[in-house]
Length: 121
Image 1 (cartoon, helix red, strand yellow):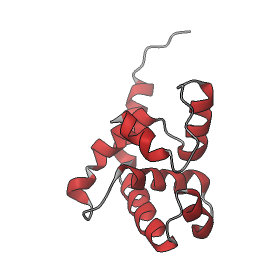
Image 2: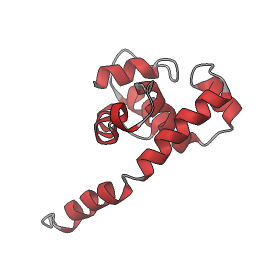
Image 3: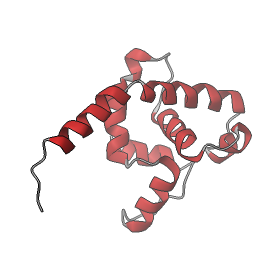
């Protein structure tokens, strides 16, 4: 599934052939979460069952792009692949909203890991 997200991102960022530091810098600059995290989000959100039909990988990337870049709709719609503003707004907000509902679970997992991790100093 990671490769599916990378393929979907090709309209948004220039994806280098190798998955080195340039890839990570460009990906994180646009989305703020690596492809493996995008896969995890997709599985947690389960858009096939929780959103209207038509949700695809690029829509999750639009939501992450919106949260990371927070640009005007006109500029963002152009940046993510020359879509109209309404389409961009609808899907980016759907995914941004759905991600916000994961906050309690995700923050809790991170805090539990942090609190119960043995000290290594």
